[in-house]
Length: 411
Image (tube, rainbow, N blue to C red; front, side):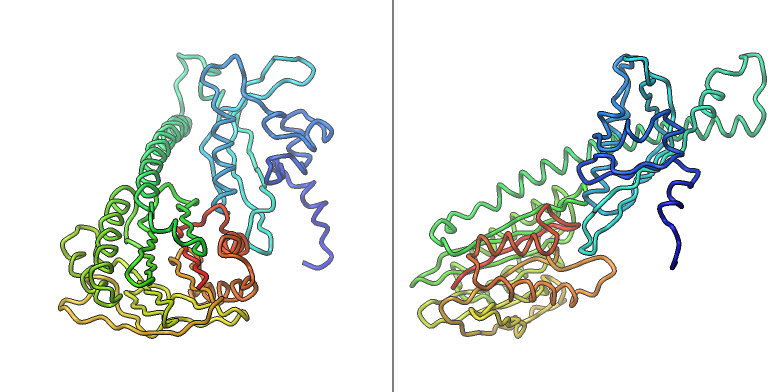
């Protein structure tokens, strides 16, 4: 609203607010927060939030720092608000070193996004509910009967604490499964033939905004007469099951292209194999064979985003002339299409999974256009530098909401 003094509005709002940078250093605070914590601006501005508010060393069950840190990092990773369950987070009493005061808070952490969609600041809003909690946990004489409302409030409080405990246990269990799946997936993505292709860069980034990983893969395989193939694919599903299915399909496709040396036939074989593997149906994949002698790219696509041929002058061509449904979708076997494209020395072939271009509430064509524009501006970079630049400019250097597999090959 034109003419509104937002600084005055922030200062006057009755709820306590902190503003944190992405390094979790306090950059702003309102008067309500100072009143709630007994601090001055000089006590807080410019300080790392957990230096200003450490855990109570005399409380062996103190988990305020751990819980708040986990929430703030979820906000940084996902770019989404993160409401927290009721928290016991004691704070130091000013002027009495080493002495802490029991405090209970109801926090919400909300990101402020930059124009590129990255998190620029975090607003940490809290409500001090210490008086309420203490009144329900010991201030009333044991012989005095609770009112119906007080009994309900006490029940809700107890259930909120139990829910918080269960949520943390679930997060830890998912995190352990995620790490196992990531380790398995990265182990299966070893590509021995890649060592003979210094002009090919590959990247795999597990989903950063989710406790699950998916089944994205890439592959590089040497064939006869100097030819080689590139492939990326995406299994439907998450976690260990998707990683295991990915490994089976990737190995089958790598074997098929070595035996058949035609991308369409290799995908036909993979489609038939997918029907016998639980969790493999609806997998998408694209296979491209590069023939340096004739300067041809021969490719076939099973429901996957199209490869991009980046010319040396920055022009981009979508290789979308051999697109077919994902694996196992058709009830009857139908030969898959195959197409060719010519290239010149110095051109670049880019294969990727949909995590590179898809964004929530955005048409996929918008993401594809953004990738094409980024590649056009990066045509003179080496494949390794180009891969890092593309991920950085698309805001995905640390991963995205979905897994990402990427191959960049200088031809």
